[in-house]
Each structure stands twice: as C-alpha cells, then as structure tokens.
Image: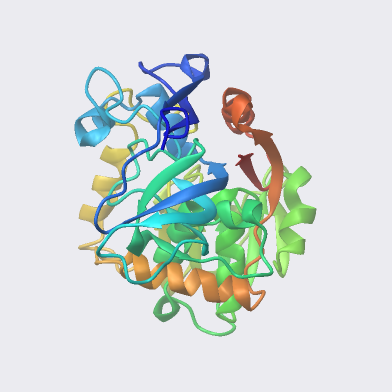
Length: 341
C-alpha cells in the first residue's frame, strides 16, 4: 500500500473550543486491533456528546479519558454506518463487505471516537449488521441516542397500555423513546415545541403537548412513567403527576453549557437523584444495563421490523462538520443531524 493509500480525510481538533477549532485534514488510516473492525464510513451522526468533547466542557470529561490539555483522540464522532473494510484476528461476527452500524467507543461517551473520517475502528461488540431496508444515513442516526432510550426504557419497566410521557419527544433521544415505548405497547404522550409536534405524531405518539402552551406537571393527568430528556422540571414537580407506582427517568441535558456547572456539568444533580432513589420508589435504582452487543441486536431487530424509524433532519458533508454542530446547538433541528462521507 502506498503512503497515499494509507491516508484518509478526517475532521480533527488539536485543542478544545468552539466548532471553529475543527479542521479537515489528511491523516493515517487507523490500524485495526485484534477485536476491532475497520469500517469504511458512509455516514456518521452528530449528538450533544460530540459538542461536549469538542468544547471540552464540563471540564471533568477531560479527566474521564478525553485528554487533559488537548483531545487524546483528535477525531470526533462516535456513531457510524458503513462497510467493513477489514477485521482483527479475534473478530468472528463480521467479514469484509458487511454493512454495519454502531458505536466506535467502549465505555463513557465523553471522548472522541474517530467517526468523522473516511475510516474508523470500532469494537465488534459495538456494531450490528445494518438491515437492508435502512439507509446508511438512517442507520448512523441510531446508535448513541437510541441506546440511551433503550437502556432507560427496558421492557420490564413498561406495561401494555401504560401511560408514558416523553418530555423532549422531538429530539434525538426523545424521538427514539417514543418509538420504543410504542413498540412495547405503551400509550405515549409526547411533549415538545409546537414546531416539532407533527413529527412527534408521525412517530406514533398518541397525544402531543406543546410545552409553550401547557405545563404537563400542572395539568392533573397521571403517568406511569415520565422519560425526561431536557430536565426542565424538578423531580418534585414531575412526581406530582406520577401514579403511586410510577417511575421518573431523567436523561438530562446541559443545553450546551446553558445549565450545569462549568466543571461538573449536571453530574451533581444526577448524584443527588441516585442518592434520593434509596428513599423514593419512583426513582429507578442503579443497575447494570444489558451488554452493548445485546442492545445493538435489539435496535437492529426494531429497525428490521419497522418499529423504529430514524428521522434524519439534515445532512452535511464531512467538510461542513462545524456547521452541523452549530445547527445542533441552535436547538431547532427536527430529527438527527447526519454527516455523509
């Protein structure tokens, strides 16, 4: 292989800051590890954790593996869809030519994952075969957001006909939460800005609420589960509209630095809720989620059967990743923002 054949285009940043720190450069194609898959990237998606790592905020993420003074891995992006280029010697589930989608990281998401490039390495347990009827752009929109929704909406927590309210139903995580809850047979009420409510209805929500017109915590209705993405209501307010056996699940959103501390972000708030869960039955107890491989298999099946339909709001080429992140921060996107490669 010539030197030119061993390089690729990638978006990189050598320091933390605004999207302006990102540059499109030629770098080496990564070497595949024993249990890794080298993916020829066709599409990758943008989500809030990408902004966190590009900006380096909250500062604690730098101590969690991102890199103290500069990013340890200079290439952002964690969600990918594409073709298998080659596999490590321990890989048994995939072969060159397979169409796959998934996450490029193990463990926490507050690190760069290398997906905003022409090639990326991913652990085999973070990938699944892409269903034939799903585009690469749709598949790339799934992993992080849908995994968050799936892990916080296990089937045992829902019952057919149970009333589930999804606050932030028009966003990346919320749109998947609506569909997963419907797949489990729940009655779903979606809350978001009026401009997004038609999309929320199209995802299967039985009813929608425009938060600019109505405060769901004061309407007097009761819910068996509240799936709260933005965290713009207190637990005490949400508890007021839960059934006695109901559950409150907070996903939480720092609103791109708008809430939470510069050093720790929203982590203190989550720690408080975890401690409170020892005394409040309506808060879920800490538990180990299913393996990444199992969860990706569930998502692939939901995609295959049409119970999960990713909504791609807007696509950008690799050269326009900074613009894509700015669009995300504006908060007006309907559906997922996807990078095409």
